[in-house]
Image 1 (cartoon, one colour):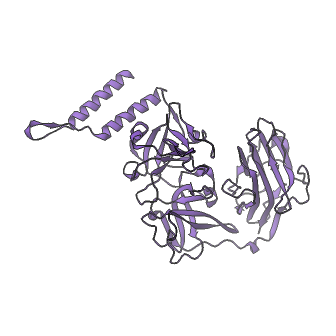
Image 2 (tube, helix red, strand yellow):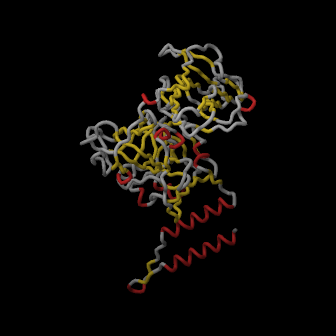
Image 3 (spheres, rainbow, N blue to C red):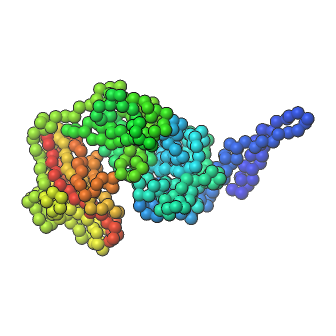
Length: 474
């Protein structure tokens, strides 16, 4: 490998010599192209990765090193992360930052990079493959608690809970552009998936959307706002509507453009607003909005009068025990229990492993068997809330091949349903609706499972509440 590097140095030298040009009086101008320097630095970096001198980490693994709301983490090990740029400040909708995701097609994770550079798009253009050498950089948040894991250059002098941008004089030692610019294919997701922290930083497409309310005469930004404006966007989902927000900077080139009145699709990067209270979509360009069709219309709830399941937990107390239902502990000691909500004074189901002292907790609450053969279309809905979220997760699953026996739960095929589960952007003490989940593709007898997973950290495991589970059909 040492011989190869000497050969590379010689090649770079020859390239540089070939760039010399003669000028008057026999003097020679000897410029060395910046691109050649960059390419050689990247070659050496890749060689170091190949030689296992530097570890190449995925964006997902990198993000796992930092928990939102904690102090910034200084990277002290020799690690590198690679990604593809998916944001652009060309139209002024981003400022001294860019987002990159792990793959050009079907990404699984994205991350923000804070960089003290104007017109970033000239250097880190959309689709550009970028390597970042992370040693002595920081992971954290530029706005404490906003939920956006960011790569930055140092801790803010006025607030040790936040990080600042990578300085220009540090950029050349940490950021490396490849010669590759990939075609980025937006990941098609549902509106529900926008409200998922795992999708922050990815370039996505939402179909069948429209701006809610009366939009005629309104622009992307409110002229009374100084910085950013959130406009609500919605889509039809079964028997109702589900929404999120498009956030636009007052400094963008399209700030004063009129909002489209029809329906269609848009492509944008998922992020959070300044306070971290809401998930938002941020455009690169107004050309990524195509709404020339009619707005969608939800299905009529009156057409779905057949109720296949209706459980509000009002007739339970203590450990949940309902005829035909299964309350199963896979790991740990915590099971689903009845709980009285202080706000509504009504009962709900609750699960949490706080102070359990278990290494891990996995607990299932599974409905009775639901016959999906005698109806044409079915929709599931339920409500969730949370006392706190730390290191825990709640999933909703469906199986059509489970035999109803506890010993075979983990051997059955369970498919995750695209439900909205309460998250840290919600007022966690209030119940949020799952939206209507279409079950029409499933046949036979089905079971719906609510699976809780706790980390085992006795001081930081979250608690979830579940209520008003309904399956409507026609």
